[in-house]
Image (cartoon, rainbow, N blue to C red; front, top):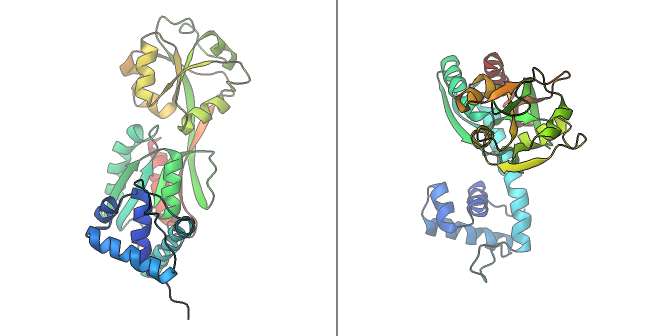
Length: 297
């Protein structure tokens, strides 16, 4: 029978790959650095392969290490799913790790967290705000249990429950040329410099697609890191921006002194959903969270 690595060894190794540091991985795994280093060496001995390239100062994997890293996370996620399924826990009873993208988190989380804990008092809710690509990776690796994000987005191995539509609003300074309009057409935005989030934020891609910005020849003059920054730039007269409905409802534009205008029909929008890893046994919990957040938006 082929000797197999232990799950603990694989946990140590994947932590090392994530943190790219023996001390950081040891801290994450709550063990001493020497214990983690010994476990990695035992794993290399078992596989008769060097996994860590120790010939360079910077952290690097050998080709064999790259192969193990690519497969280990899926094995650990499956093992975690097995334990969870056997335990037969009731939904949202115990630890639950929820990821949220930055263009949703500040406008939904405060109310959603209270509502979830009220409905499920035994839940231990752990929250992480991150970009969609990073949350998808964490879902696949089993580092979070579900994610609140905007779709469409390519999510292999991930299931999604859609909660509802989140319409885009046009936002500009009160003295901007388009501020006097009652309704904004997509083609109207040719008249202004548009302030959008930088690459990596799915809201940028959704806004470009939903508002046909490329087809209408709309220019984007700025790439911001947050919606708050975009509203401040717009208030200074440096351009206009697009805000999701949940941000407008929460008062982001009003606090910045911006005028918000609806788009002509068909109104551009993004869809919000709760995602979880297929086969993880988290469907009931994802549905419970989706039901709560649906009422809020």
